[in-house]
Image (tube, rainbow, N blue to C red; front, side):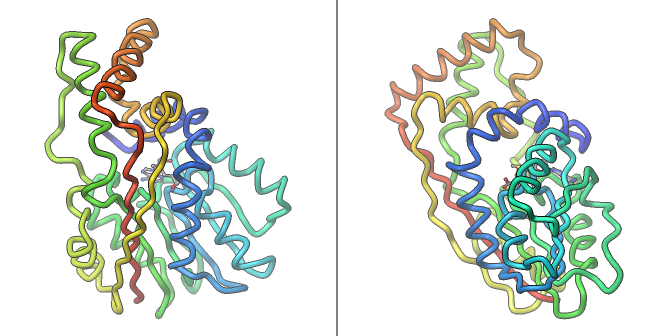
Length: 267
Ligand SMILES: C[S@@+](CC[C@H](N)C(=O)[O-])C[C@H]1O[C@@H](n2cnc3c(N)ncnc32)[C@H](O)[C@@H]1O
């Protein structure tokens, strides 16, 4: 998937993304910000910020003397974040539509750069990661949050089975999922270290989310899995939904393992 396509997928996903926020994105965003630990007055860059799950706790932590730049490609998620920042009176939080991999940064560098569920979408994770680390001041802290290798399964497999059962076609897989490069504490540690970071630490956050029928479908339609359905017409999507829901029940899947890895390091 190319970078602008990702913005289009997440734009289209905005309503279901919002359903997922309190169940999935926000607890993980809060835990990430607890690890990146911005201080009052800090300048924070939150890339791939979506609607601000980690940018909001960061903005509260830096307070009115600090600044948080939230960057994403999906305008409709950014609009959700802007509306909420106004409602909460958080002037220090600004949302901008931009590509994280070319964001120019600020004079003197950021104190903290954080990215929750984003680096694995970059066309080249090493180049994108190095660019972000280069936006830090000396001694600044980088945090990347990603899925543990046990997470999310078997939902994508069940969705692919449902699509195959309804359309007769097996959805194409473009090689290994990009998350696979950083989906264990060892791999994430190795990647962060390869970016030249010091004092690298990875913690495992064992989040779980209840999967009733609506939450399960929000998970499909509210994030990257949605891309598998975007070429299907509305009636076919409804049939996939029915089959997907039936398969989840047949296989006794009523909870999502959302185990997350949070890696930190400093320049
Ligand atoms: C799974 S969402 C996570 C959003 C947010 N971090 C959260 O946890 O709620 C991934 C986000 O990354 C964004 N994204 C992917 N590649 C990007 C890039 N190169 N620059 C900026 N945003 C990007 C997508 O638009 C999407 O909103």
